Image (cartoon, rainbow, N blue to C red; front, top):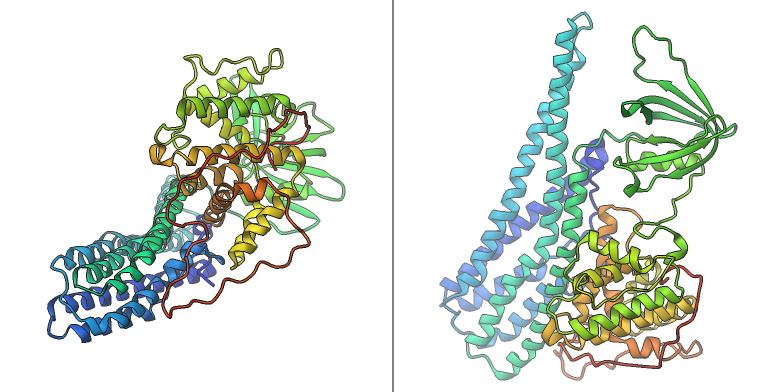
Length: 610
């Protein structure tokens, strides 16, 4: 069991439980820092103590062997499990080569010591500085809060306003330092999975290759080294694919109002902001609102009544409630309610996403129908036009961009993507678009196709919890054939195309692993933007990778439900021949284009993909 993710929203509540979980991360950081000091010290002993080489290597191997990685989340990918077990593998290998004591390579310091010192200085050191800033701002804020609460109400209004402004400033500083600290400490926890393992891996490689070891031991280590490097690269790719989204989430969470909590009661109440239109523009007015679930009565009391005016509570009878789409308004956490008393919906803004969910659950709110940039939901169905669009995109890519470096990785202009989709799905002349026109380029067409295919297949990623590789493939095989016919046909069409693209990876550099990083979030995006959801992207990437690498088995034959469980792999013949350490991360091979039958153009009313 790893550490639970620290959500940025927890920074605003600053609960004892949050502080306790943060303390666990800090203890793990100190443990890692101490471990790195031991590795650096022991590595120097190996380099300098040639006469005591055997003793130094034994100590070094023991240090590696006792360390255990702690990961964020409950489940690990195969790559992460490989990384977690890598130090034990290193330690065992060192014990075997101890009889062949040799001099250490002269550049061992550059391979091992400097990268780990750099990690401690640039990552752990920065995290400790963020911690000092967080503790300082925390002390300043709560000290100022105590002073603020002890102010006399008889003070002048100007003095009270100045005190309020000062407290708000300290609160913002505290929240900002807290969010930054949480972000940094989780980044270090993730980065050490490859920034710490890679230098040790390089150091071990220098020992084995440059110290005249036997051919047998070198050949035994090299396959493991290559597989582990693939695991490290995959882990790094997963990290990079989620880091930008986490940074954006962190920025959005820096300055929201403090999150409040509502409980499940017959009456839900709290502060909401109502959009009110005037002759000169639009304003947002703060109300204290109550909603009576049984009677569907919604009461709005002005939180800041204007002087010299008597404004009583407004009572409305609720008819329905809908979440407001993000792209339809420049405010977050908004939802609309329809009432019997008003002809137009009332737009309300909650104080947080969690708060909005509570209000919508109480009002039995509904999610909006997704439109943008195509205007009608019917236009997004898997009908003949949708299949025609995907086939034209695929044909264009395979004709013009199959060998283009980074195809599908480069993102097109959002304006051009919307323009292409609106023109192609125009009801007056759907599909009447010349892709070979100078108006469209590869990245615009690939981005438009990814937008069309975006949907949700979260259930498939759960099969990765199985330890047996055949079980995972079989589970994905079965789940794929449980999809509606047209959805499976569209998925097969896409994956067959990705197999062809990966078959040219020597030119375009797009391997199945890289395609998984791109299409995992595209096909299996989570409903909520949280740290925990973003960390699950790594499992979605692996599902796409399996679909590409085992396309023929999954899509060209139905699963055999009466077959027995997949056989277990035979035991190892030699005492130390390592088994493959990743599910689909075998040494790179050419992915040949496949064609298991001509797909037919038929109509369907299903939504895209799954």
